[in-house]
Length: 188
Length: 188
Ligand SMILES: [Mg+2]
Ligand SMILES: [Mg+2]
Picture (tube, rainbow over the protein chains, first blue to last red):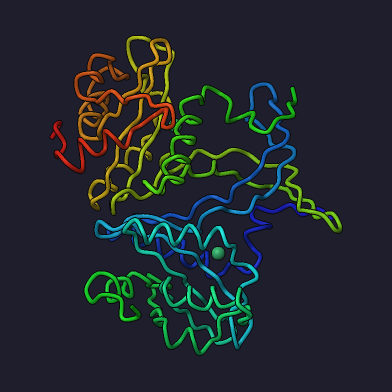
């Protein structure tokens, strides 16, 4: 099967990502923060160079990203996070979180950056910011026989509900202010 | 003309970029910093989904990046920079610096990040770190009839020669330490 599309890959359950991209655009234009989505890495195998027109990639493959979806700068702090959404009602499965992404986030925290997950439960349309440290406790447990998912209740207990605003549909910087900038991380 | 290659595009005069990628790998593995090259953005037009194998991109185009080549985190600071090399002996032409990249770098500085150019003169194999502020004076002049390039002498005067080390071929963090972390920017 072959599809003509601008974002065949991007469309797979990425409403959350698109809303964050829009939110970041609002943050950028209002001078609040500079946060961008990293392009999906592509392994290019074959390129055509037609005369007098742009190079055409004729064969390429999506690669697994080695870092996170988003990074940037807010109030002098390095911000780095991963967005995940699930149709599941009871938990977020670990299946599409890669261990090298988690390793990357650990490094970000070690070097003084702010790093977290933005997790959406699409069935109930609730979106949470979950700091790295509570995530890590559950993540590590899976390698010692623990469950291979993050329970919804764990996320509501250790995470922060992200408010919806018309201009900032996923207004996560409000939570970043409360948790990392003004108050200190309540989960530590 | 059609080329089979892993990095047809990447090969166009990007020795400097590759050396910075290697340097970053060393920084990462030695726990010094977390700095990555952003993937080149690609506009995907057509994708095939063969049964039981990976999606194949059949038509795609390189896009102009809207930000810079590299960003990351060092000693709690957000680092963001653009690498440029030239065969030219007298100056770095402005032709392949995009104004939206410069706008991005201005925003990074406004929000408390560290941002600069790494410029290599390949003919003499000298590589400089040039902070944003001296760059901007020359960049703005071009719109008032000034020259459309950065003179070599200007770069040597306002920039900092980046030392070569075996493990860190473009050891720019040593300059970042001197200019932004320990000493303050001598060019301000
Ligand atoms: Mg994601
Ligand atoms: Mg470059």
